[in-house]
Amino acid sequence: MRPFMDRLLEILAGATASPAELWFLVWNGYGTQEDLSQDAVVEIHPSWHGFRAYFLFRGSFDVSEVNGEIMFEPPSFWWPEDRGWFVSTDIDASSTYVGGSLELIDQLMADDLLEVLPAELDDPFDGSFDP
Image (cartoon, rainbow, N blue to C red):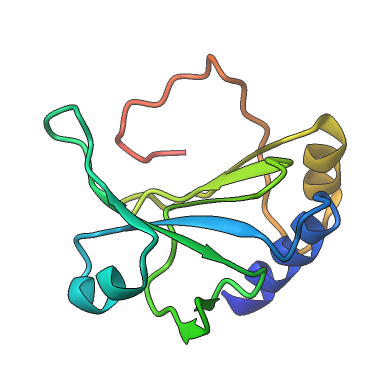
């Protein structure tokens, strides 16, 4: 898993003017919830019933470190300060979604290490997490 993540991070770092300023949303339902809440900028609760709550963190491009501490739980959503791209991995899904410029998506799709499939905003997603 790490080689894939390292490659994704390398590509994403080149697609933002603010690689040292990232935002992360981490689901508040992990077992380390109390530890996470101490370092979070804020805890975000959904206004819709049935949706997940998250802790918001600010950190660097080293996704494993936030606020100078090692983060063991993966972020569900993350993006740079300049909003050059957006990454989403649902805790129950087997895929990661990346939104960004056509140039970024083309670069991801051309990479031999990553398995990338194109998606459109109007593509159906029913929550079954089947590709």
